[in-house]
Amino acid sequence: MSLEQIAIELVYALPDEQTLLSLQVDQELTIEQVITESGICQQYPEIDLTVNKVGIWNKAVKLNQIIEDGDRIEIYRPLIADPKEVRKRRAEKAKEEGRADKVTGGRVNPLRNSK
Image (cartoon, rainbow, N blue to C red; front, side, top):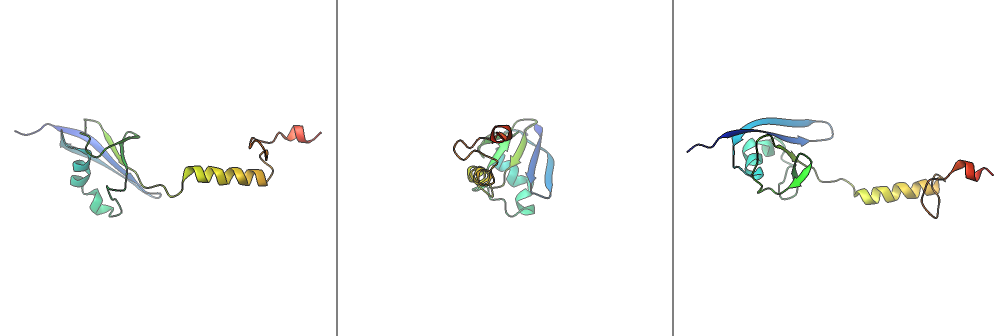
């Protein structure tokens, strides 16, 4: 018995390029099976499914999830920097430069300081 074919997209993006594969695959495959069968891991050897997170339409999902017609499977790269640390450094720099209040961290009102 052959399974019905469905249309999906598989996406992997680097800072300077994006690969989007439009595929016709058997329904009832898992995300991991689609990624493996697509050959994208051979094209990008840095993809490690034990490390890289995956999602469908910007929503994180598990590799064993069954795909559906119209899914856009996205393979995410690991974060380079912790977003909380980046925000903290940016806030501290703003305080040092006088663009943020040293106590509250809020923006400095230039009209209030001119009196």
